[in-house]
Length: 411
Image 1 (cartoon, rainbow, N blue to C red):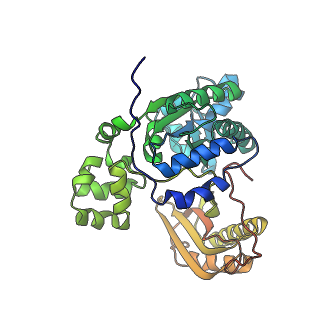
Image 2: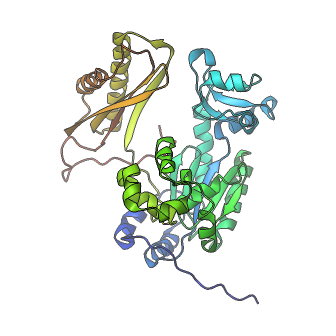
Image 3: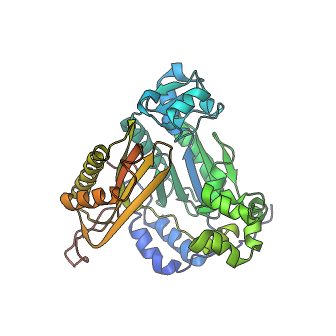
């Protein structure tokens, strides 16, 4: 009989015991595992056992759904999005299209230049949401700790699972197979001791990949990673870090803290912990809505201020309607403007008193627009979003209504 592997311990949750009861009170939902599994999960959470975290990401989700439902599209370079003549943007690209350099969020006009044989399919979000619901039901058949990130990806804590399977890799294999059988689609999964590493692992061998970062392999894995792998390091931060000689995660560890803080500000502690492989964030079954908004890319650049103002006012009114439908309020209004040269700026305004009054939100959005160069520079895109959401216009009282946290596919 093979020797039993020792039960290693790793990074513990800070304050796990104080958070656990609230975490599990949100985990119950129809069709998910029951009390015994939740009890075992609780004990793992507070004991500091090595966690087994999965990040599962559907492969080219929108485009794959289209190829599944239209056999003539299979094997062809397919994108989901708007037409290039209408300033369309790529929402998703099949792997055949990605071979030509086509990527999500790319202007469709550029995508067509890269791949003249590109097949453009308009999005059908109702269909994607239906498939997403199938996938998330499969996730919750294994564990109640499922944190949806978007329609096509989620974190799962499978430290304890309905199969009592000790290996996260096996759980991931079973979930991938169930998804394939139920939807005809593939998913890629990463298995690791925390969310940061699991997210990186899921993208390591796409499509239909499965990458496991065992605790004993974490350090070796981290040493391979460029600084851009860190959550929160985009192109601007990357340039700042590389300018001071930080190219890999191990460079960040060794760098003098003061120099790094000058480059990244208050994000230093978070980035430094990630570079060490430390990520204590729990998998939360419900993700609370923190903001909502709407934005539009115009078929032609808007040159006149009054044209942009009318669009922004309409978007602010739409946000007010969303707040009213969900019976919540906001403190902050943000306006986003992208000029014709793709320069993008945002302007925000916060008030101590939450509101959802349409006239007030429109007035604040238009005032923020006046702080931009709209009317002086052509505007390609405009957006309005609301943040600082709360369930009452004043501090919640005993009789206040509460907001039900929403899943990615909820209307």
